[in-house]
Image 1 (cartoon, helix red, strand yellow):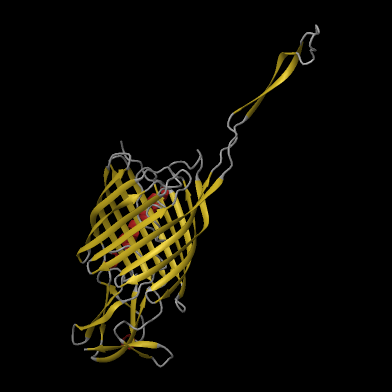
Image 2: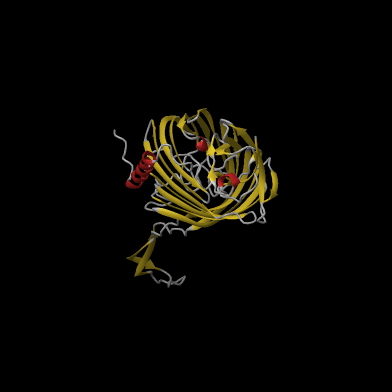
Length: 447
């Protein structure tokens, strides 16, 4: 039997991503990156047999200070079914002012609804599968974040909408659901090359009521009426015509909301060629759904400058909103990727800082290599008196290393760096001095 063809929205999303990847210049701009992935997958429902499968995917991401755009297309096939999915996401952030920053993120997903859903994190830092079960789903989230040194916190609010769920909704014929203004809050802390974040979110689910199917039937009947008979008399009962009313059917029930909180902690770590991302979450009992925990881990190991081994696995419980089956899942494969895409993106409110001193090496009589370690950064820029104070994009060498090769004469120079569009700061390991304009810059000594 041929596999079902993905619906038009999914085909469009996959076509757009494929076209953008093919059309991307080679080598692409520093902020424009593409990756391809092929993996073997396995999923085992707790009450069923394991299913093996294969996955092919492509990812295109554009990063610049204050803006991040991403598109992903995936085709997955198992022993029983096949599914095609597409994802488009965007992140817009304001410049940092005294440690404060506001972000707005949006995401849209499509899938054909006939096969397994991708269990992947979203741009919003949501748990895997949060937007993957509906045929079409989207989310919009706003956050206000504050950072001080290697610690930060955020407050946010989001709305999630979905249409065409495979289970048809809570009642037959239901086609969509929107959850508005769901608050969330979180904390994060950087420990060298590792970033730990904890998020607490408020969730709700509207349970549809049942329409009343009560039916009232009225009939006439003849019955003997003996209410007028007196004891000890010869009175007889009278035959009377009376109306009999009967009810049948379901009286129905009103709709209501179930509300609960979820907590999830995440660890993202990178060092050299290795990157790791792990999640662990939990929620209480909700209605007839028991309390549950979930978790997953994803690791990449760079085998070559553009080739990485990927491995991951985890557990997903029953969804509160849908009749899904708990399952364990795993994947192992290869990814053709630039170094900047070795690890998943950090939550939108997390802004890591550089670790270790700026490494300065002379590579030629006229050029110097500058290397900085920044875990989980999307963009790193450098500016100094040797660039005319124009920002220069640094190039990712690995999951946490960024490089710039500049023309630099031996001696003392002034410079600053900017990470993910944050404020310009002196690179670690440099002496901080006044720039003469009520600002601070780093003092760089070139050999």
